[in-house]
Image 1: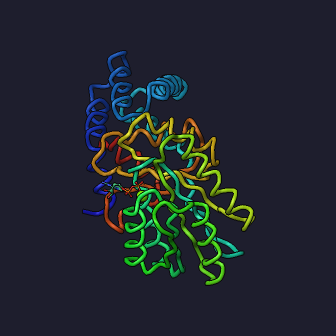
Image 2: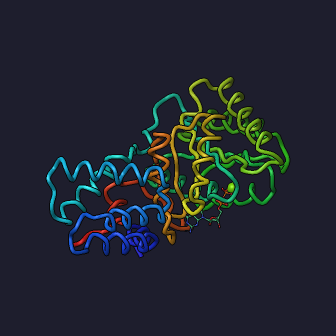
Image 3: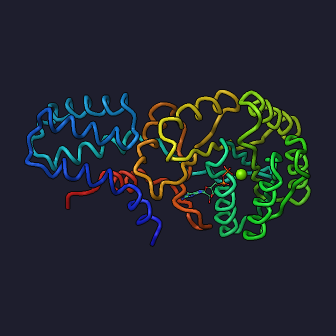
Length: 301
Ligand SMILES: Nc1nc2c(ncn2[C@@H]2O[C@H](COP(=O)(O)OP(=O)(O)O)[C@@H](O)[C@H]2O)c(=O)[nH]1
Ligand SMILES: [Mg+2]
């Protein structure tokens, strides 16, 4: 199954709801608007945003004198696309290394995303190093090491329980010495408390910045699409602590909850850099708002 098909598959529930509403007999009545709103809320767009979208749609229908459902459908989708700010990962520039720090709570797919990203960058001919600054579990270090082998990337780690900031420091030094193009740092998602976790991330940041003022160039938060509205809380907390430059939304395969991409963009205006649509090495995509909105909201044709 190709990547777009997999994304569509996950979002099929929302899509069939919306197409059946939009394929109705064409009256813009309360039933129409209510069912559209419900379908959006079921897709995890969030009540606030769904209500805003409906209000804006009602206004647009009036302003544009739209009378047919098919025109309303296009208007609706264009409105959604417009609301999605996206920019792909910037091309790296000197001095080397370009440093990407990856953060997020446990289990969202950080390490897997790093592996996929390394693969993509290697395929573009870049040299990549992975730094295992998630020192919380030996398993986490080993998992990243395996990805480094699969992607023929360099690997820097210390033992389980080591100071994460010290690993980050070593990795940056090694990447500079080897003139590596891109260093990607994995980080922990679970310490004993949220305060500990944020302190650790802030310390990593301080150590990186002191050593290499241009870094990190990117701080990506990975969020799991299936966690729903809880993702909003995660973005808020990590953004306050470390200042995010981009989001990666994972597990969009096999979820009907794709609306979270919209909810996050609307609330934080942090660009979605990548989306994850499976566990495999090739299952990382650029976020294409039009393709995404088509996958989520369908087509009548
Ligand atoms: N279906 C699916 N599974 C994913 C995706 N990304 C990661 N996973 C799985 O999620 C689980 C946790 O991933 P991991 O990278 O270890 O998360 P971490 O704790 O944030 O580093 C693993 O079983 C991954 O294979 C995705 O896009 N789709
Ligand atoms: Mg991990």
